Length: 180
Image (cartoon, rainbow, N blue to C red; front, side):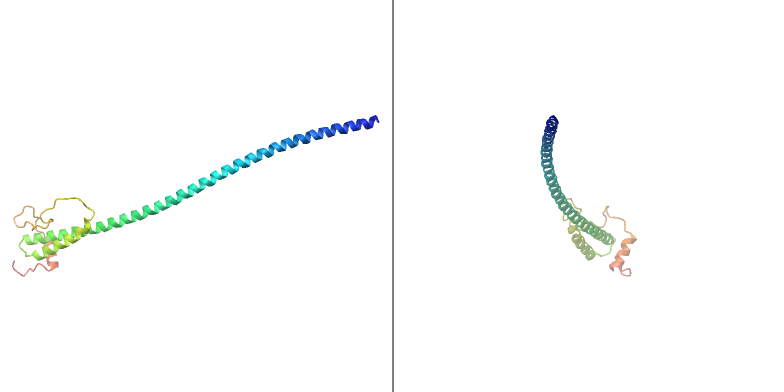
């Protein structure tokens, strides 16, 4: 019986030890479960922050793309305006050169009054689109302001060139056989 009592006592102590180990494991597993819950809550919080940041980044990208497209359209329009303006400035320069050539021819005694008037009209037509954006009140010389040009003994008159004669012949305004 002593032996049975000793075995009983050994079994009770082993049971008690297993119970205490089980209790320790329960506490440890409970602590780990709480820690897992805390980590899952933090993970969910961080995930929502990431989702929010992603949504903000998408919004910023959409605005940036819209702004970039608007800037491209504006740049394209500015380029087209500049090209149109450059075209009309070149046309104005051509017309002014032609008018000056005709005035030089007239100053040398050729009767080119009609051609000069036409050249002034073409110059005015070409000058209007070129100066649409200019609000400057620049002073104009007599020939640019629509007044009759000073011809004859004017010291500002350029020397008559062969180029003026060629242009007058090409325009059919200079007849070499006719006396002026």
